[in-house]
Image 1: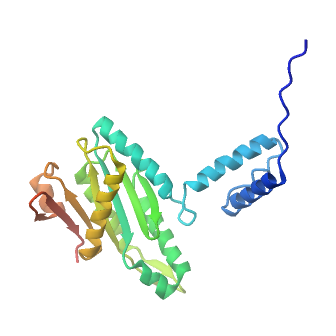
Image 2 (image 1 turned 90 degrees about the vertical axis):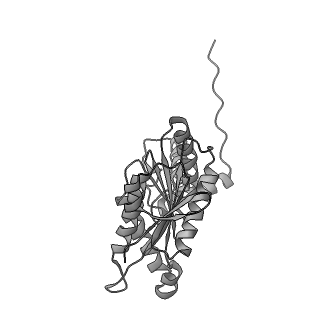
Image 3 (image 1 turned 120 degrees about the vertical axis):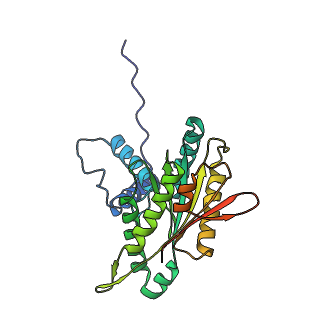
Amino acid sequence: MSAPQSPSPKPQTSEQNVNLSEAIQLICHAGYPDPRMNVEIDATQVLQRVIDTLCTLSMHDGLTGLSNQRYFKIALQREVHRARRDGTPCILLMLDIDHFKKINDQYGHPEGDRVLEIVAKRLKQELRPGDTLSRYGGEEFAVILPNCPLKYAVQVAERLRKSISEEKILIREEQSLSVTLSIGAAEMKRTTPPDAAQFLKAADENLYKAKTGGRNQCYYEAPLKTEVSPDERSVLFQKKATKKSSTKKLRSKK
């Protein structure tokens, strides 16, 4: 008795062929190789390559090559749960390029895009391989620093700020400009509820305070239980006491 034959795959409709063709065009336009180029693979493998590449594209920013907001939120949730489970510190930095709208207005959007590309590249060079750097949207970036104590995270934030402020970005026929960053930082502690949304909100609120407080600085608001030695506090922070918490601000040197 002969073995039963597997059913033949259903033929693709004209609409499905159009969608696949458009997907391949999108992939090629993004700089990826045409998945049909390898003659040794069948249609199913081509389709799988298309799916894999589209998944990659959906998680990355087309301009800077960094992971995008979609990927960032997945990574943030993962790191929040890991920090909670293992009792390890985790820091979230939200970064914003100061006065970026003026750059677009004065020089045009192509030059603004170049600024974003240069800033993204420079930030990436200053981080560890295990850190997550994402373009959160517009001129805003996000950095997740897993297993990073507060005192080192503050140094990282200052290094990022200083690195960008010292970068000369070449635009328009040897004309260059410099930009600065405002940074808001938040710490995930083992006693903190595993809520990525609240973690993000805390960093975003501190970013707002950094911008309204003069820009080109890192702002961090710490719970009273945060363990920072007096020496570290005097070197790394400017202390501003409040009733419920100690607020610490790292300003740029002028």
